[in-house]
Image 1: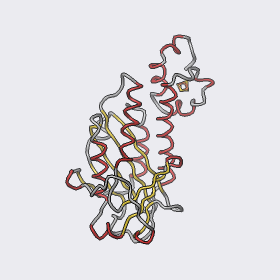
Image 2: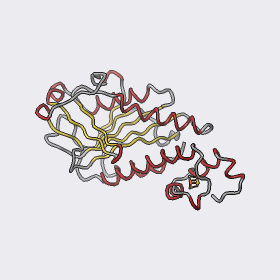
Image 3: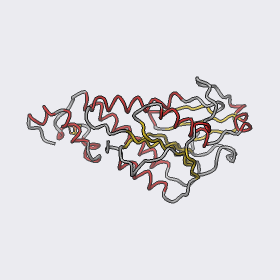
Image 4: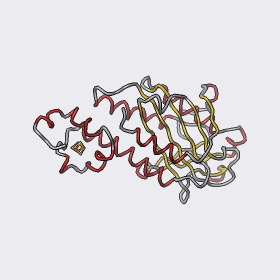
Length: 246
Ligand code: SF4
């Protein structure tokens, strides 16, 4: 699973100028999960993260390379929840090391999708998540009550890690939060789009659609992402046999 490796490196480059707070994962740090989404009313909110007009990005990247992801950790670049006073920029990036998933591509795709859906199963108390998959943003409304009770990125990140690690294919999960101004949130959002393009291209490949790169609408992404064409013609060996250009 190397398809996302270059995006992991891009992400490291976005963050290179900062020095994060780092916490090793421990299940006992998880925040209270209320099991279903909670409506935090505006009047009860302390502030919003990634609100409209602010930077916001959200994505998950997969790898099987232990040099890139090898810890269960929460990283924070910027102020923590109790230090934030007003609406602020926000990115949540998840890096997952998965078991080597290189043989059955249909299975790989399903596994990746299942893992990604874990994010819809985290319901921290006083932390209302609104995800806009179509523009790769995530907006959070944090309640004043949760701040009083001591909510932190360490606890929220731990809750996400716990959810991701429920899937046996996830070997390590690193959750990164960015709240400081001055980071390249637009670049991160572009990376989120690319990650999504890769996952969608996997679907198209699995549906066995185009097999001629010269006329394929996905050529842009396949040219850019190492391993994509190999993946297609590994799956669609029939396409390669027919002598298609790739
Ligand atoms: S490998 Fe070629 S045919 Fe397959 S999706 Fe990519 S560009 Fe299209």
